[in-house]
Image (cartoon, rainbow, N blue to C red; front, side, top):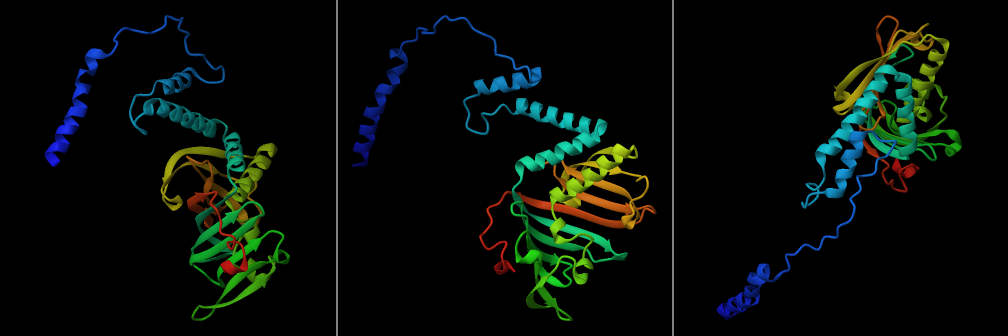
Length: 308
């Protein structure tokens, strides 16, 4: 039975061997005037050439059919332009970074690491899993390291009478306690952080940084310098543009700030790291964002009491 099937298959396939002798090999190309690729006034010549190659992709499966070298030119050109902007016009570079965030971000999940002095006292380093939504402004934090008065907290603008909710931590053994409702200006809340939960976020950091820089630039007292690209371990080993503002003229009244180091993620242009020092060069605070999941789909319970 198997032999019959094999013979039948050979009989079916055999005629295909004559196909090269039967096909018409005469050219059917129509002689038509050939026009050069159309140029675009807004693109540099190298980028135009790279994009035109997309119309002549090789016959390989994705991703092998992409003109990687040409695309690399475009990415490299953009990177060089951004680095030149950061070096020569750092304020405009930071303005571009802020605009990038505004056009792309509706929310994110991330690991937020902070270490700071609060009212002159250095607190333990904290690692927090943060869930953030822009509209309405919503923050849900879960402490993974360095928890103090609570295990998790929640703030949603316009809800809970403007208060934050927190799953309390009961000393001395750290048992889970009830959910507490606390005003943002309560003494025990302000004692745990330099900034309230309503000031959390990548954008808030970028905006506050840029606002202060623009104010100093307008006053003619800005000292801001680009220091190249670094791999930043605390930002998840991301390649980042590094800028340093120092000195402040005069040092900021709040904690005598005199130096700010800024890390901008090379790929996303988000401000993912900040380190602050005072006029004596002593540590004040640092904040880093890593493992960023952009525009996730949040569960309907994410920003409710049930999440605590």
